[in-house]
Image (cartoon, rainbow, N blue to C red; front, side, top):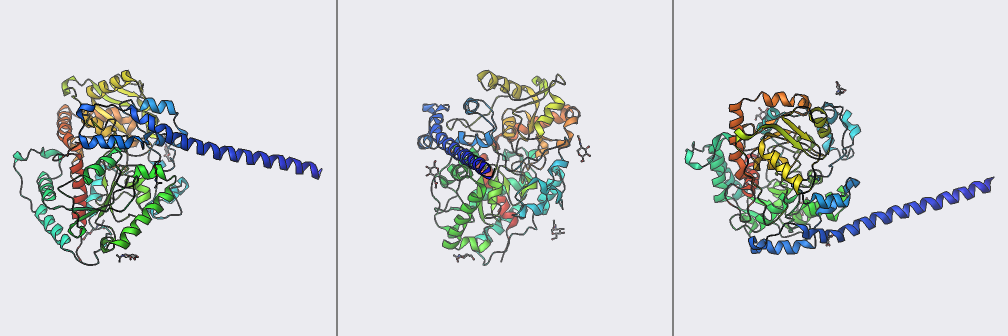
Length: 537
Ligand SMILES: *[C@@H]1O[C@H](CO)[C@@H](O)[C@H](O)[C@H]1NC(C)=O
Ligand SMILES: *[C@@H]1O[C@H](CO)[C@@H](O)[C@H](O)[C@H]1NC(C)=O
Ligand SMILES: *[C@@H]1O[C@H](CO)[C@@H](O)[C@H](O)[C@H]1NC(C)=O
Ligand SMILES: *[C@@H]1O[C@H](CO)[C@@H](O)[C@H](O)[C@H]1NC(C)=O
């Protein structure tokens, strides 16, 4: 008897070892074959050799060996490779990674998402959903009014006083005073006042940024994680910013003593590609911070409050929350319930870039009178909210065009565009995470964005008055979506539409950046937040 058990046990053991080897082998095979394939897929992008600017041409070539777009899309086995290759040709594809576990919703979209602030600071909890019981101060979900009040209250935050004073701080302080006392500007500024919180202050602040701001970029950090912009894909905003910042003449200084702000030039996307888990990424950034804190005096002076990073990967918020907690973080995943600090951190818009040569996707949208569809949405069923949206609105009302994923071919793309340009409102529903490239797409096609993503802080929240060109709907109000939109008067709609047209310039990338474009707006938000929080010794 005993011997029989022993044999059985041995067999089982051998089987288990075999399975383990298989799993490990598969994992490696998958990782490496992907890296290989991506080189070939990388050539599929639209390419117009005549419109190239030399500079970008070089990048495109350099990039080909490193194009890892497609690798991310495999995560968690959600998608098949062929589908992804096709998707890459479609107009709008979202492939966010889940930042942490999805918490199932019972349909209210509110109950399900309680996460306490203390959890974010408690390393041991690691975003586990069972901690939803540890509710504390945070009110969920955060409405726009609450976001506004958080912005106002952000000024008494915890950023440290500098250890010693610097001439740069005094320069910033004098700029801050000038902005506060900005004269009311005349219409000739070319800015459309209603879309700004305070057009005079914005205009003055922008001017002073152009005149005064100096940025130092640390040379430390190895490629490809540092100093190597990735210009395509869903996380391309961080790459475009890096590229334009590193190539900038106006703002960059070689001497760090002259700098008001210090840029930590890494790509969160590349970091994700090189290191598999969040802990390792966090440790990597921590080592970097220790390196620059040891080598220069600037980090220690302010504990990093005059340092900034620009990162679009879904996980960037999480992996920077400890090592770079006092830095100004420009993040795509701007979720106030997950550690995004309004007023200190700032929202990086998600711009899905398909072609480096032609990043602009401004579309001639139809005039308001020809927009016959009330609301449009199409997309994959990422996250908990979109199935709820479809459940309530798919094929329910003729003026509500709410769909699941569209065909990825040219025809699907054409239909998608047709809807974007002929709908009054475009629903920007959160996916796995709060951010979505739809907001910028809607703006480009002159469709009023309807932001359906609780706790998301929209881009340039510090300066833009989002209610003048978009509509915010709480997740729990999905069942009332149509009524909410119908209750907006025609006059108000026309005003929103006009607002959308007037903010377009702030969401456009230019290979050589121009005034008020996306690059400058991102930098302005960082400058703005530094000014709001500056403290003197
Ligand atoms: C969701 O849960 C809350 C509290 O547990 C409950 O009040 C609400 O009715 C539920 N909603 C649905 C749609 O089940
Ligand atoms: C910020 O400070 C002001 C006074 O300096 C105080 O009235 C206000 O309550 C504080 N706000 C927060 C959120 O702590
Ligand atoms: C990161 O990944 C790239 C592409 O696979 C590789 O060439 C590079 O050596 C890696 N770098 C580091 C620091 O691991
Ligand atoms: C900054 O502080 C860290 C930790 O306290 C220390 O190790 C480092 O040497 C300091 N840097 C400089 C340049 O003094």
